[in-house]
Image (cartoon, rainbow, N blue to C red; front, side, top):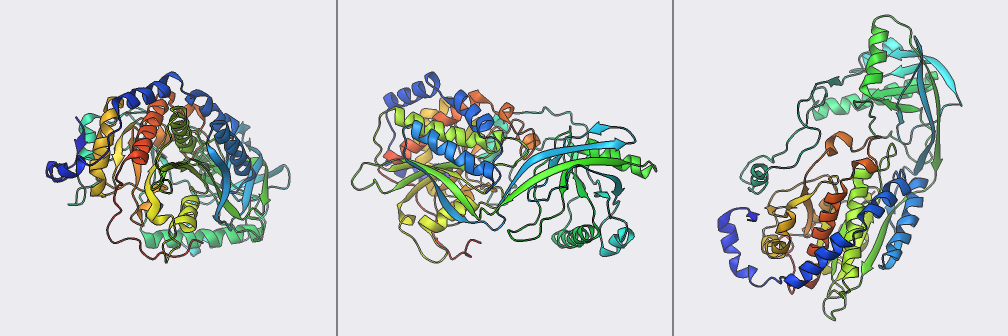
Length: 521
């Protein structure tokens, strides 16, 4: 049975539920037949990972991927596919075009390194001795290294440790865990999250400590550059997997020092050798290209609405197209783009002319701060101080951004008025595992942009599979995709989007919105 929070609330909505529009069983059968007998998930999955490659925000790789996806959306029969500017982006474009990192003394070993985005290049192949910074908590710690960094490769403190995990690498939510999701957290219950073991980071510092650490690190980076260090190394990740991250940079700034990320196995090895008194040397050849691309783009297309009264209302579905540069963004977030594109294909293949417009938006710059979706909000819905034409025409937003795991339900962001709609629409897809309606909030992705202004915007509850271990890493590739799960997710998305487009009613906005917000910078 469907898990709906608080039985009394469900009873209170009973009279409203009769007003919701449930699409026919015949249409549900046709939609599932299209989704599973004629699926294009396999082809889309290769296209959106191997075909697109890395696509860091504003990079040449991202611009290339935008044009390829626009072409693909046109081939799927969608209307007006385009890449459109969302907002300005002061960091500009950055692409890694060469990456060679190795230890040469006390013996040779090539490393699986990942350059930090927006960091600089070496002057061809360079060689140098490694200096280990054991502690960098205060400015006084920096003085130990003053005058000692010229021509050196600087290994920053290795604070990560490894803890053996006896948990499975991938898992699916149990029925008991999903029951927990279905309880309301507003009385004070904490959100449930199963944590996978593995690397054990150092204890999390307070906000004040973090601010001080950033200040000290910025002072150290300045000193290292002034003294002529060759490169700075940070250690993050295990199993020879490197994480994606970036440096503080804006177009027009002097090119930063080269910076790379090494996994714990490599950074930890060099730190131990150095602490034993061994001499450690490395050689590096890093080439990164900066481009003055000062904007973030979204890729957008539609199936136009046809009802004279409802055609200007928009059911929006989306995921972010940008990725970190170490992999091809398989789980984060090609998976979401694949599902949304396949959902649009399914609806189009059914030959239905929806009452409301159904729009797909594949966002740019999510990883740097939800730039694409925030730009869309500012351009179409709410400019920070006043409503724009699209605000009152906003019917629904469905977002995917938690890997390629199967949909088990949806987070309703404390929007109690959404319950009768999803309860009615969801009956036809319960057999696909879509059963849990959670009142809880979940964050850190593009639906938050719209929910912050009271709009009905939601993220799915997904089986996490290997997501926490692989996203933002050089392992985030085609292999992270669970194709069978993506087929189910696309069918569920298509059904919910079509239900929202055809329903005589609309999911209500949250009371008391919109609210003034700072301008997007």
